Image (cartoon, rainbow, N blue to C red):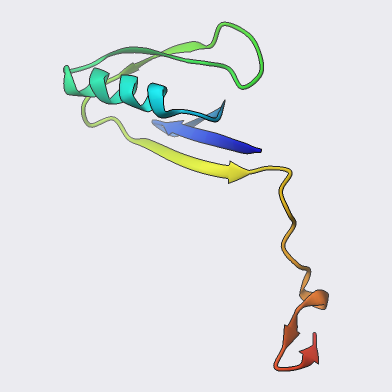
Length: 83
């Protein structure tokens, strides 16, 4: 399952996939000089309205939760040697 982390001005919001429509709304709010965009909750609830404005720091990150785990260092074979 992919979870998206939206970081706005140092605060994290976790969102389910897909986020294409939300990204478009945020971009439109910024292009128009600023505006409120409703950030939906990860599970349930009304979400939160955030005022987006030009110059506001916004970062998107995708996180794979529940996927395959990377091998532990004891399971890695380097040059034919188990470490």
